[in-house]
Length: 122
Image 1 (cartoon, rainbow, N blue to C red):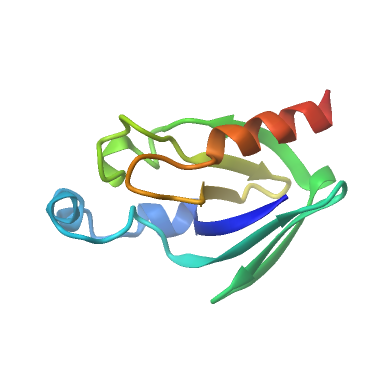
Image 2 (image 1 turned 45 degrees about the vertical axis):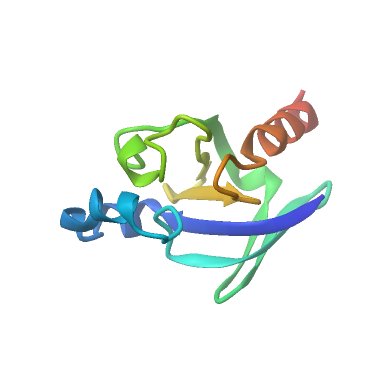
């Protein structure tokens, strides 16, 4: 499984300029993210390749969540969360990664990826 991905770590989201959160809703920019590239899923890992590279062994995942939370809120989505939700990966060591996969103005493939990953752990 693969696709285009926008991603950010929780520390990047919390250190953003919050004064710009509402402004981007009226511009042509993408949802809040700090990195972009391609995402690849194998039976053992998630690989992110783009302006930064990251390898996430599936055994390092402590939590998988599809939705907004106190850090990545609906105000960071172009449509205030009406058409898509971020995919949150919590990792051993405390890192949290927010993914937006195959984004278009009307949605993402995050739910499909969430379902696939959930089935892999079942």
